[in-house]
Image 1 (spheres, rainbow, N blue to C red):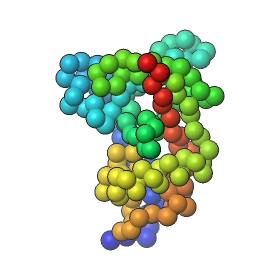
Image 2 (cartoon, one colour; image 1 turned 45 degrees about the vertical axis):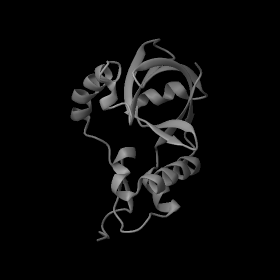
Image 3 (cartoon, rainbow, N blue to C red; image 1 turned 90 degrees about the horizontal axis):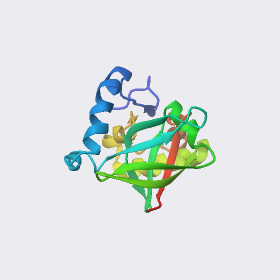
Length: 159
C-alpha cells in the first residue's frame, strides 16, 4: 500500500558504517578466485585522484543497459571522472583497462534510473540504491525527484 507521507522514489543507500566494513571484504572478494559469488552484480572501480594521484578502489553495483556497462556514482570520488577518465576496473575477477564518463545531467540520470527500474522491477530497486514507495511503476518525474543529486558512470572496457 502507498504511504502518502513518503516520496514515490527515495534514495536507499547502505549505512556508512556498514559500507566501511563491507567494502574491504568486497575489494578482496572481487579480485580473488572466489569472485564468482559476487561478480554478477558488482565490480571495483580503481579511480585515480586528479589532484592527489591516490588510487581509490571502490566496489560498486554493476548494471548493463543496452549493452552499456554502468554504475551509479554517489561518492566524492565521482568528481575524478568529470569530463571522462581512463581507469582500471576489476570485473569478473580480472583487472581491465576502461574509460568512464560521468553523467550528471538530472534529466538523463532520471531516464537511466527509470529504465533500470523498469528492468529490475520496484521490489529490486535496492540494487540501484533506491526504494519505490508506490504500488505502481513510478513516473519519470517521481524518479527524477528520487535521483536528484545522483550520477551515473558509463564504462567502456578498452582491452
